[in-house]
Length: 228
Image 1 (cartoon, rainbow, N blue to C red):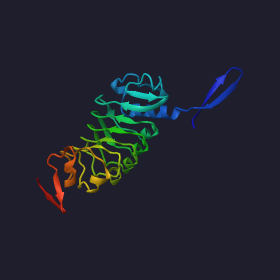
Image 2: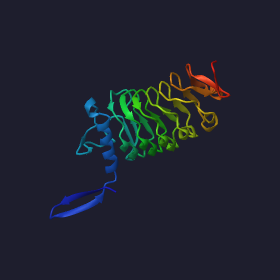
Image 3: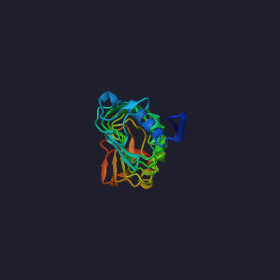
Image 4: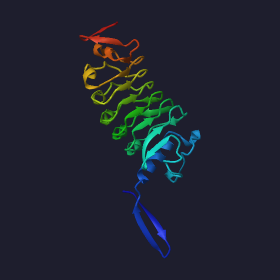
């Protein structure tokens, strides 16, 4: 617990816990890392590592509920930078949207600490590296968009096992390998987009998904690729 000291007359000092200092510091770290200040973002300003004004008001695109940050929406806002590991401190987040910017670097594994996140929209950036397996800890996640970034590796089994996941967009990525058959039963997908990805193939059972965009990605059947 972070504490703050307040001085009074007659040399009396009172120390009390700062309930929001850790979150405030994380928000300032985020503001610096994604270059809000450099883009002239309204209200995103800090002094000595703490917000110059309340994070809940008037930080643009930040929504709070009873003092907790529940949503950060910054799509198409000309942001250039990275997502810092301190993002994991914002444990009350239910929505995080950084889509359509120029964010780069690796996706921090600390995102896996955001266990209340329902919507995670990070598409349209230039993230590199692989998808952290910690994303599989996002037990509330229903919507995941990682499209348009040159992320590599395979889709982690931990994500495939998320029973709440309904929308998955990994199109135009550099993910390789084949989507496993377990994706058909382990996840209640209603929307899947893999078009223009580097995936080798997908199981035919996924074809029944109503909103399925697969482009030229092939169907895997009996360990063979069949073009249909």
